[in-house]
Length: 243
Image 1 (tube, rainbow, N blue to C red):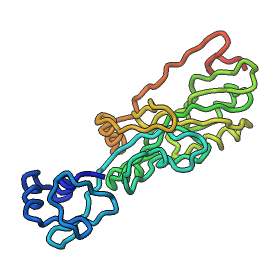
Image 2 (tube, helix red, strand yellow; image 1 turned 90 degrees about the horizontal axis):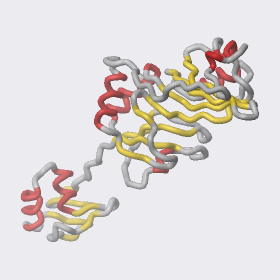
Image 3 (cartoon, helix red, strand yellow; image 1 turned 60 degrees about the vertical axis):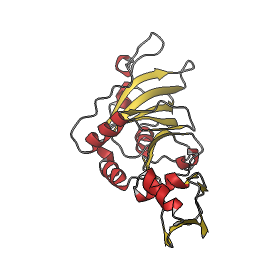
Image 4 (cartoon, one colour; image 1 turned 180 degrees about the vertical axis):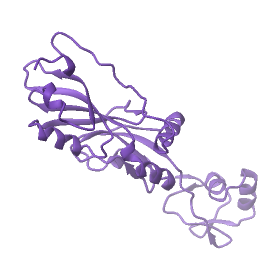
């Protein structure tokens, strides 16, 4: 909902003074009832007319970052506002989790989706069993970092950086070396880093908008380094694992 004064200024791209003149002249109706009070509320289902001609609400253009939780089919369920025509960039299966981008800007969606396979994505991945260095060498088009074994040495966690369009490609690559993926979470798209809790969303920041557009246009490279590789005596990087 919004006030009729805001509805008119936004939909008609006019000043508040001009909107007040329309109201004071009795030209504005909501559901065929003349409106004079500029603070009268307009609901989504209301029909607003000026001298009998309908005025369509102008839609807010938004760019949102969502942390989709596991088990949720559609990340748009997270949004608690009435934004319309939101499209998903970086779709995830119901039991995959992490960063997705939502927008109702057709030009932005077309630009990013058209170049999505040229933009780096970073995932936090856990597989069953111990991923060995010789196995990782056979996995092409993916950088594997921060490899750690759990205390019982029954699973391996890692970061995977790839331009692969869909997370199932990670699952397929791991399956080819006899490791089943038990968890995959997208933590980065280009230079946009997941920094909100599961089932939360936020508006994209101006520098994020600029960087992902430049990435899609090929004018900058994927330079974000989200994590530093750490090694300990118990949790070794894959490059120092014994064969």
